[in-house]
Length: 195
Figure 1 (tube, one colour):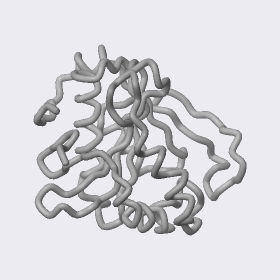
Figure 2 (figure 1 turned 120 degrees about the vertical axis):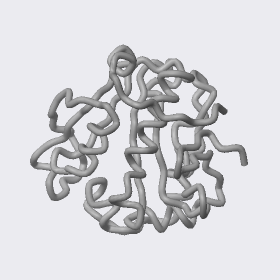
Figure 3 (figure 1 turned 90 degrees about the vertical axis):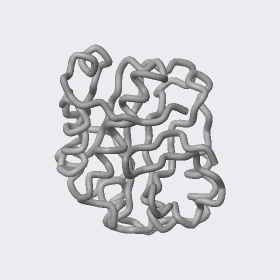
């Protein structure tokens, strides 16, 4: 399968139905899901019927998917996924950045490496004008990845979630990066093979 994007250590590729077991293992880890659903166990059938179709969706405005499976380049080990998804299926200008990696990948810089590469690809190849990212206010690790990826704090807010989870009383945060700001930043740009 042709990769969507490669970095020094990561390969991002389209999901397939064969990724069901890896997705289940990822979402069944209470620590991985702590800031998503409070660490509840995964439902294999829900991953097959709801999660996987969302990950397989092609966005007409970009001609690409919004989610990619992340593998370690040297070993092919499944690490999790990255998201750079248009918020409007018919307009690539505003995208949401996201990531979910297994615990063995934490603390190694993979989330920042993949995020920076996706941001660069979005601004250079996919007609993106604004990248946004959201997390719980108490999710310090995710917030740090957003900052290291060039995004800046925009606002705090309280969502109307069906269930409250530990930390939700502190609200959510939104970060953003505009293409003009990214172009003006003096940072090393990720070097990646084009699709």
